[in-house]
Length: 114
Image 1 (cartoon, helix red, strand yellow):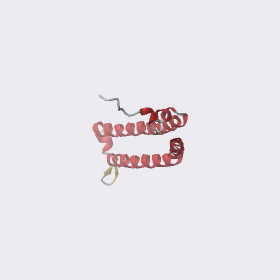
Image 2 (image 1 turned 135 degrees about the horizontal axis):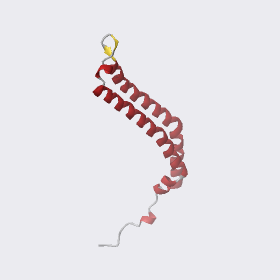
Image 3 (image 1 turned 180 degrees about the horizontal axis):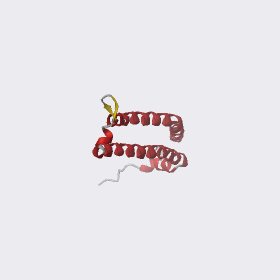
Image 4 (image 1 turned 90 degrees about the vertical axis):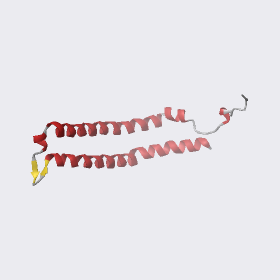
């Protein structure tokens, strides 16, 4: 074996561990988790309620609403609508609340590299 291993101390670049431990990054993580986790739990509960109703409440799901359209069909379509609403809400939240903070962290990293 040779002693020609690269010198890690001479390598330049951002200290990602320090950035991950920084208050701005931790605040960004808390904000992200505070939005994503509750919505994910809410959606999963809504999804499993739908699945359980479909599996065990046949008469309820077969309740006619308009013509041949029943409650089960409307609740199933509601799953798709919910997915799109959550996606739009997250994009709006990320654009307004998270992206400015992430941009500031990125600029700090870029300045530290110079």
